[in-house]
Length: 248
Image 1 (cartoon, rainbow, N blue to C red):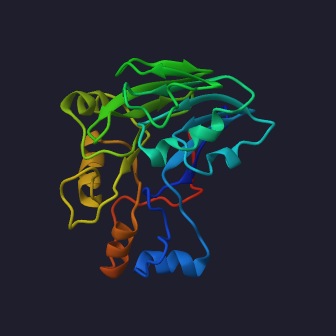
Image 2: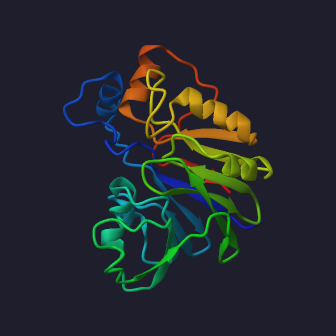
């Protein structure tokens, strides 16, 4: 069996943890432990290869020179998921960057891609990179956003960050797939029910609807974590922390 891992660089929202000047329960806990959690992004690593899903500010630091950068999959062009590309595009190698159709893009990325070839996704149309398959899944957000169904020789997972929900076509597609795991945006606490993201109760329900074997929450904010800490809530599906590794 090929050893393939999904490694999360960050699992937080755009503010990160801890938030400067904030003394809420979540920020205090992170500050006391010396931990830092940046915006949600991850990379897949196998053999001598890496494939990135989104790019935060410190994404570049995760690439070791001995690894071959195969591709970048972008969920959307909000800054916290795309600003790492501003530096990555100056790599002395060429790589494709797959992304949703969005005429606004981010900064001048689509005009000056440098080392990146920007390729628009076609929803539900798979792309193969090495022996992995990526299928873009439309999500409901304030910018055109795609999650990704990722198939490896070992497992099938869904990465669904930054969404306030998913449409019927996307839900039906996921429900027809035998998913080993799903990673779902749960940025808000339960006092927020509508907006750009899901709260953790809404995310729990979505995981149950999708019916994956395992469910995990990502894109955590200091609001959601503080609410959980202050109310001593035991979650059915866990938030994962920075540097979380999942075998796929």
